[in-house]
Image: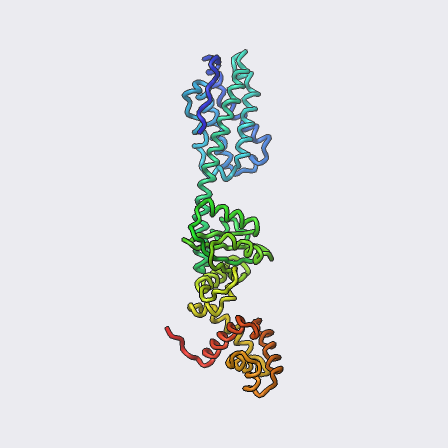
Length: 397
């Protein structure tokens, strides 16, 4: 903290002047509070408890001024002005509002200097108040800096706990309360993005990542889990675009974007898909960066992801099985003959153009094109899973 300012060497504080200032302390406190109530609308809107604590601070400031005015070099009360009030007061009023309090208090003393000071020493009293008010301003800034630092550390811990809970799929009242406390608006879609970093992010780099992300989306939660980085993004229609622009913030290796869900309460589903895809990503070395979790459905099945298994059966095998026109049979023949149109046509006793038409129908029904090498692999895994399920083949434990 800034050391106390000393009075000029030639400044002499008269005993009578001190006596009059001490006797006027109560009057100054009442006048200052009346001035606050008259001029500051935000002060009038405060809760009664907060106004009461401000009164304590003002009274403490007046007492500390008298101590300082008596012996500026040895005064210790300036740094204790705000100690009487609870730390929560810094959340009720801002630093700017606190400085307004200081300014009005100075104006009150100046206005009453003629009544307080011995005739001829009014100017000395006003100058002393001005010097003292600067110390009070520095003390207030220090209080708010400490409070901001503590809030930042607490928010970081709360954010880490919240991200961990979302990754585990928790969605109880405690998680929703934490999300709200972190300022999540909850007004739009959500996705979870995961990747790795070569070195653990320190507080500075983590804060910079948060700032960069918040410039792109409405809501964000950042989780640093050893060498894994988790981003929970919330916003409008630009979520996927924002996620792609953040890839450079991750270290080398796979970066996975989970599916978009409707709200933060469903973030666990996006997180589960993203984490499973990150674990399965090494099985597809040619995967793009970033890669969508649903583009790794076959690899996720290989690492035991039941959600991926269910998704492939429901979105690929089920619609093909329910369709007419031998679409499923044609796909099976095409995949089983080495992806050859002619060989599939011979096995089915149809023209190759018929096979080609039915394969286009497969793409329309499932969204995966069997003529594409990667997407035909996805369909082949879906076909195998569907057949196993249809024949009720039990899975190994």
